Length: 283
Image 1: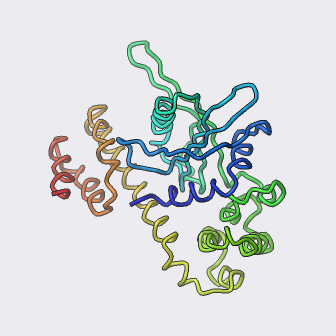
Image 2: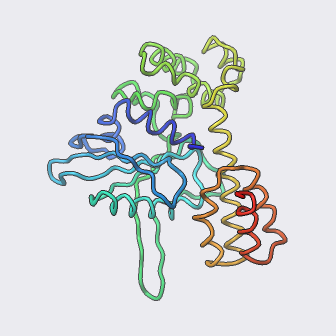
Image 3: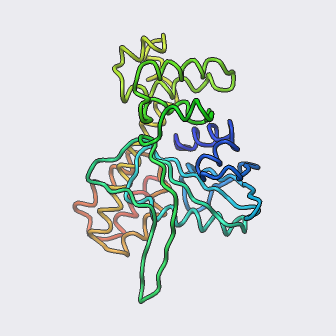
């Protein structure tokens, strides 16, 4: 199952890749050329969107976009892995960008880089962080940035009825964008009551709940929570050795299997017992 971010990310960025890369890099001289395939074999998530770009001084390089519904503690390591894999695959420098859609719990601090040290050897990966709740909603209409229209309700100042209505009108006025209306409704439901969203959109909220967008985002949110809990449990119980299972576990899309692993960590005493949970379910 493709993740919601993958379904939305590639589709949204492809609407205006040039405007998107100019915005995420904050460089007006960057030109978006093409969206590249970015699936990496040992990482199951496909929410990364790689755009090949050109800059007069740097020449060709890659902008790697990782869209996340909510930030989690696994992301710095993932950003390091994605950037390295993209650079190796395409033999081009990489500018990684992490776009967080909804704010995490206040207890979680969002990191803007990854660092590790083993026997005085250091590894480091910087990346740009964009938190959508800190982005002014009016930028979407002024620049314009059609890729961000569905996210307007969760942007800064985007929770006003008039602003949501403006976004709805912009989506409905473009044949390429009107299919994204359920996604806008989904994010509007985070900041406005269902009755208000229904009034603005002029359609039954049941349509939203039945849409693939709604179900995919809900499932991905649950999956991320389970994976974060599993990773924390593995690290606390088995240390670095336990984290070696994460590349395998991260490929699991079945929420019931992930839940079984998460609950099993309370009583399981060996990594082999954990591996048996998901290998048994595969067969």
